[in-house]
Length: 95
Image (cartoon, rainbow, N blue to C red; front, side, top):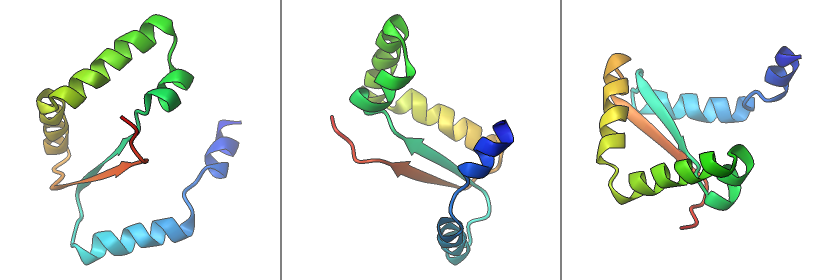
């Protein structure tokens, strides 16, 4: 069943082509990608339970207030894979 889910949720070939063209045009070979999607009314309500939600909201507010620690962890992970570029993706943000 999991293979069916994977087959059904693949990125479209058009999106893959656009991404590949962008990466090639910028000569980017090693990169990290981050999809920032923490709209409290969206993702958190669907993916967490009461206490876990409170803890997660606290972490997200902390990151938004001072992203230093989070950024340092991202950079450390990028170094592990020798990534030279980070691509950030986000949905519209509602603060």
